[in-house]
Image 1 (cartoon, rainbow, N blue to C red):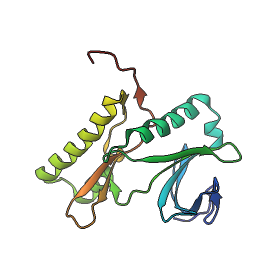
Image 2: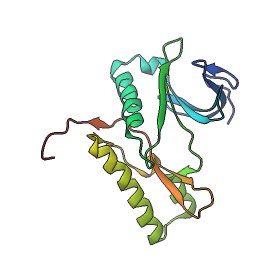
Image 3: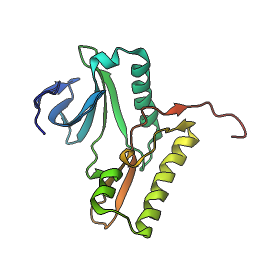
Image 4: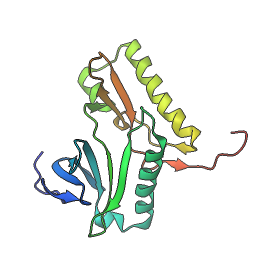
Length: 178
């Protein structure tokens, strides 16, 4: 994907730590980039909320909530958020683990109907991630194939399902008996 039309350019250093490598995608609310760490060998995804969108207090609150909620879950079936900050112009961003593979929606378009054993495995993984979120009082509220990412497990004939995009999740107070 060309970097033309994106806010951040390859080589640009964000927050003194994340070097932008290339754009990964663009939507109505923001942009996602692949980034490397300036001092370590890690690769990450930087999700940037467009500044004009981030000026809406409700949108900014939900974006920050997504970063906070996802970073504290620390479950193998939920995308890990590593950092949250703002660019000098005020545009908020979060840094997540970089996932390789494709989302379940694209997988279904590419291969069609999945074998039952694979469906059971994926549903088990997704349910495990959601159970961890629910145990913390978090309801995803937008679970769909596009929000489940399938990443190959090296050395195994299997994928790891990761629930992504907790952007409209609802954090509810846990009460006794729930």
